[in-house]
Image (tube, rainbow, N blue to C red; front, side):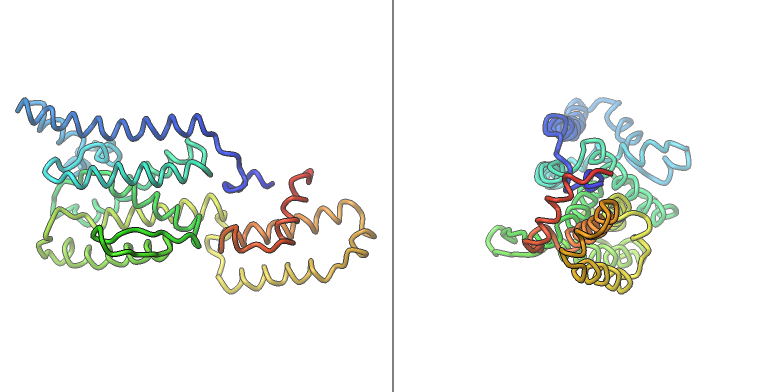
Length: 296
């Protein structure tokens, strides 16, 4: 029961590190190949980019693989793009693989890229354009991380000298809002962006990360559950369990005791999902320790 939750699983360190390193290496290798072909000024350079990058034309030709492969080519005129992608993979990947299996991590990354590509394609189907870069994948990892650890405080230097402290959940909400506004203004309305920018793709990645977390960590039922209903049910379960005294528990059958303990553990795990491990009381932590020996 507890092993179904990502934060209660023991991480697979060796496999996680291997998948992490291979993913980062493949992204860097793709960028180096781009530079190599450009340096040689060979014919395969532009053709390779056109076959790998995403565009409405490529989808109309049923080159559906470009929904994923566009993440392995980047704008060689903007080195900050590849730096941000690699840095995001190193930082977010290292954190997420402590609580995720490598396969789940790769599925999350790939799903975010594909979703970002789909969002971008819907808007640019008629207007054209080419999408390249793995920013949507990084956005998906960031959104998943934000909902996995909503109470964690991130500290960084904005513009390299302004200290900023923000919770990842609020950071994602701000990025999502900016992406929506920028998508309407630059991509739909047609204003000229100051730099190469694909906000619809970024929003698609953020949406995919949130959706993946909602499905894998909360389940499909909780995805559509009203917030008030959830709060009432959790508080009610907590009151029901606390009103049962230790004397009454000992008088119950073993199966009934296990059932009550399971209900309380589910409430505690939902609380971890919402507010993080640090929000647990000493009694709740003891209940989790008791549940480790609980047999199905």
